[in-house]
Image (tube, rainbow, N blue to C red; front, side, top):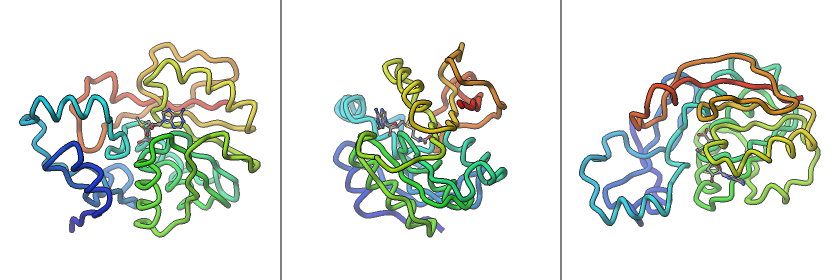
Length: 218
Ligand SMILES: C[S@@+](CC[C@H](N)C(=O)[O-])C[C@H]1O[C@@H](n2cnc3c(N)ncnc32)[C@H](O)[C@@H]1O
C-alpha cells in the first residue's frame, strides 16, 4: 500500500507541482520503507520552470541513491559493523544508511545533512521504520564520541573530498559507499566490495553509476 507524507509532499510541490512523497519499499532492502518521490512522477513532462527549479533545489532526500541502498543492505546483512556502536550518517538525505544502522542494532545514530528538508525527511523516515535517529544540520554540531561514520553518495561533488580526511580524524572507522569517483585513492581507505544497484525512483543513470563500491577507512 502507498501512502504519502503531507509535509514532505508540500516541500516537493513548491518546485514540482505533481510530486508526492510516497512511502516505498526498497527492492534490495525489503525491511526498509522510505518516503520518496512518487515512482509515477511524469519526468518527461517537466516544464522549463520546473527544470530550472530542480537545478536550484535538488531534492536529494526524495531519492534513495544507489550507494545508500547498497550501504543499508550491507549493514543489515553484516550488523556487527554497527551493533552497539555510536554511528554518524553524514549527508543522510532520506536517512537510509542511518536507519539501517539503527535497525541493525546501533547504540545511537546521529544523522547530519545541510539541507533542512533532508532533516525533516530523515526524521519522518526514521519514524516510518520505528527507529530513533537524532537529526542535526551541521557536522560541527556533532560533538559526541562517534565509533563509525557512514558516507553514502556524498562524493558527487569534488569539494566534498577533504571530508574523508576529517572523518578519519573524528572516528576510528568510516564506511564509504560510492559510485561516482573513478579512481578512489585516499590515504587510510581501502576497497571492501562492489555491488550493483540503482537510484530509487530510477533516474535511469548510466551503467557506471549503478556500480557501487564500498570502502573502509580506518
Ligand atoms: C546524493 S545525496 C545522498 C543521500 C543518502 N546518503 C543516500 O545515499 O541516499 C547527498 C546528501 O549529502 C548532503 N550533503 C552534501 N554536502 C554536505 C555537507 N557538507 N554536510 C552535510 N550534508 C551534506 C546533501 O544535502 C544530500 O542530502
